[in-house]
Image 1 (tube, helix red, strand yellow):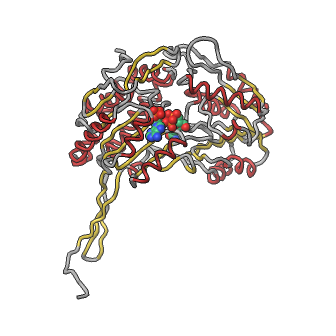
Image 2: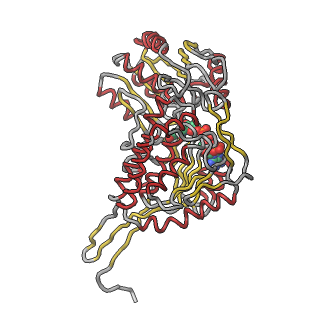
Image 3: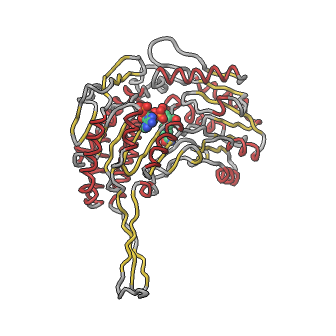
Length: 485
Ligand code: NDP
């Protein structure tokens, strides 16, 4: 079976597809060819209101179910997603342009992992009992209420599930707004949750541009906002949420360092640098885009990297042999090309790529700059495309200071065979997710999120429960009440 790219309707509210053509048109473009594969409509303010009302109505009964019952529904949804992985992956490939080789293993499967993991945790949610002599205190872990999820375009299914799974496990209901660039797969997540037994209104999807997100964030019925997006959007959303004292999770951008010492396995370090810069055509928030290579092995690293780049297979993303896709949009390609031009202008040495292949679609070559200096634009700003910057360094102290000299703090990696040095380095790195001798592995069991400007809160792992629930403290007196008069 193949899913049609044109969905039944643009939005999924209260358990059903809903359309309203009066909303601005959202053309969905297949990035590999530039063809329009669907047309959706932005939600009108009335539809956004309807989605929030549905989520509000559904929330008390959903929270009143036992964790075991909610968890069973989430785990059933995970099973359905796995059973339909190929159809979901093909749709994700058409929506994002990412190669099927990737989407088959990293999108619906990752979403299913989150549904399964938080489905399992749902039954374990509990408070504590604190004895105070005869009296006692107990705590109740309660849902926050109606939550809003807002997603970026690079991992649409994964982002929807990484937010919905813990939110729903804790008894919240959700209105999710995908990026307008990739609106298709969140609708499938909504369909699957309903099929798995989630009551209507528990998970709703509304499409739209930034203003739909803004309306959602500002609504007083909303208790929690979880955004995956850029730092500028994060600032806006966080401030809007703050005025309503709403709880937030912000998963934002990065400019992460990948530090390779000269005792590292060169082959593994090159593999990690490839994964950290070219997977999903570089459109990954946690990418290690500042690759610091110790002076003794820098030329050997660049030589081996150039050889390995001959293995790039760009082409039809639906062909499972293809391992490198196009950029998600023309706009994103132009942004990345602007950074590449800046890199050359400011004196970095272009050692691979930099060009635009002929033909339709938003293709760009995997690009490597060497001799990058810390103050260059490509060293400081998030590019969000397949552009690797290679820096030299001499000592551990020097590289630690330079690695941390950024406003971002999402991720970092260290390659060395000296494990004491590896642990010393990660203790000093200002980053929420660090890897030793690997890069970009983000299993659902491991908390994920940023320090500094890269974010607030954590997704995944048991700690996510803290960000999707609140505690109520109950003091119980067993004796008489004393009063001064
Ligand atoms: P954007 O910040 O442009 O958009 C993110 C989402 O926010 C979109 O759905 C967008 O809608 C919406 N939005 C925009 N303005 C507002 C507003 N004022 N109020 C509410 N919502 C709004 O990010 P991109 O989609 O371009 O994604 C790329 C960025 O996401 C990169 O910076 C990347 O690092 C980051 N990212 C972070 C991850 C993490 O986990 N830390 C993971 C993946 C990506 P619309 O698209 O319609 O404008």
